[in-house]
Length: 98
Image (cartoon, rainbow, N blue to C red; front, top):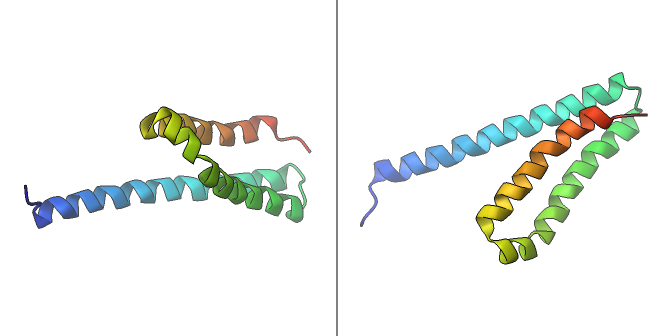
């Protein structure tokens, strides 16, 4: 069945909207962690290390997620990794001690 231009644009728009929402949440999380770290008395170097470690974790997780996807499938892997990714920022707020 040939896809119409309207259907393609609708799919592209939904994909870009989902990505934009994820990026907004990610940016807000980084800002929140930086502000909270400053309030808690962390040095700028320590706050920077937390931010850099986040992106290091993203890279490492991307490189190591292949076996998980092969073992349980992409849908279950996405659900599990999404749950972990949404829980960790909450743990930052609960467990932040200097």
